[in-house]
Image (cartoon, rainbow, N blue to C red):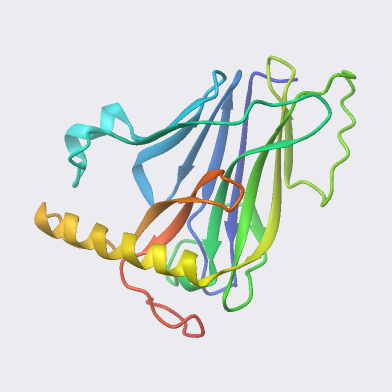
Length: 223
């Protein structure tokens, strides 16, 4: 059991890759950041009240602040139960959003294999309250990362390959267009990457990497 821990991952084809995602744990709170943005983070709090927000110290220097203020979204996670992992969040990385020209990841970053065309890698965040008190957590498929929080709960990260439906693609296309319009209105220009908030079929909220301009999934993407 540790009060602090950090885990990093990236989806990498070799010449194209995602942003580096960092999961930081402080006691019983979990913070998720991406190398594509230095201004915002997701906070999964011990209370179950979560938020995707612009960091307060970055608001004054951010190139774009939404009209809703620094909090993009707030929601509540399902409560962890004894003996059964409960999904509380996910990060979705689509093959179409991988980009060339990104820096080589550092050695402490776990590289995940890229999905096939039309698919995505989804890293699911599970919470488990282990009534037995045992540190031997057995889940399938094998976790990328397991950490026991200060209050005894376990955070478990598991990757899966997800086939993308037309609903997901249409939703992301709408978000991409809206983001471009809002940034242009603010005079901030159009960034090449960003994030979109998504809800999975089981009702869990997560984030997806998003390109401002997207190419066919079989293409190499901008360098």
